[in-house]
Length: 280
Length: 286
Image (tube, rainbow over all chains, first blue to last red; front, side):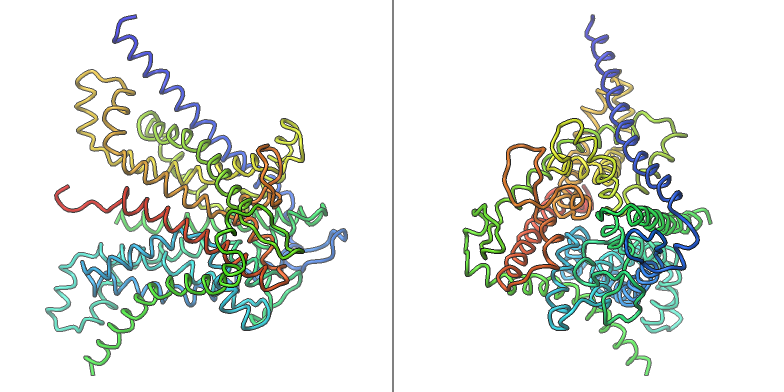
């Protein structure tokens, strides 16, 4: 074999190897997705949405408690996390351009985005659960808020910076004060991007389990009192899947399916909003 | 009047932004304060002691630390080559028609909650490990493999992004000189994107070490150091997830808080290395 032939041969080998490893990796991922869809649809019935948890073995339990609990936890987390994140992101993009502090806050948020979420759970346990004396929905929502905050902050910051400065200058030239420029011109220009960021952040905290294990804990029945433990889909998946009862495991798959569809929908929606913006 | 609203708005945004800094400091302080009892009781021995016996009020973190290190190492060894393979496939091999759907599905898979990966691992992967290697199937090896699959989409996506930063003109020049695809990858793309690729791997490592749900299902939470990978084991997040809600003494809690503190410090350092050393935002002119 000549040198050139060797190189071509080697290149082919590497290409085949990468394609194969890609096929293996993607195969595994689709295996998980397939298992999720098959088991999920199999376990999905209408009564799941209308009945609460029942003792194992009775086979007629539902997920109403977990669905409503999950929505409550994520709703309150977003209620705090979204405005706080958007305002903090506004500061970074509009008030602290190129300042050292702004850079530090950006870096810290990036690090917090990747920090282990179970540690946030331990922190909230110490500051909320211990003083209160018991697990509560609020503790869960606060943990999710802390996880959400840096995500919303960073996307808002990035999206606001994409708004051309000529728009701001034009508004200033018309005599608008800065807060008006920001709320009526800059926000409007970055609307689609911020909305996408919020949807992705909601999707992210919606799938969090670890920080809820010892904050909002869990409940096998419907409870909407945020001062008490509140059921969530994610913790219910964990409890039901690790239980030895077949009907609970089945409900676990249904919960996993519903949760994944919810999260994938938010992700796809977020992407479509950005895509539509680009096409315009 | 307008000025007042302006000042309020500016200061409100500033306070919240600074609040993020305070929040992180607060998290560290609270975890440290709650670890004090354990720090005083065990001192440095906490991380060297291999006995974790809540009934005897004896807490050593070595098995959990060992489990975290080994499971994360296994996950990285398995995921890195596959992630590079997927990234090469997406950036250099795949036809344009295949590229987008595969890319998007990998990104969507990165968004699937880790609890789902854990559940899949428990029901579908544990039996395979049990039948192949014996034992109960709930083991360090299972945890490492499930963890590697969980971080794979994230890793592949960021590696692909890093490879895609290579300017086309550099690649085209290399092809024009008669380079094969592999020549271009090893002599142009990898050198150009090296720091981005390494940074992505370290970032994935930082995530893997703190990942809880994907491994909690399949690791067993047994505080024992065993060289046999098919034995049940534990890791810091697994111990926290299993024991936090059940701890019944102050020292027990304090030891768990110390575990959480160790985990936070370690992942903080890893993520900082990735961000500040490898993924620094490119300055103008570079």
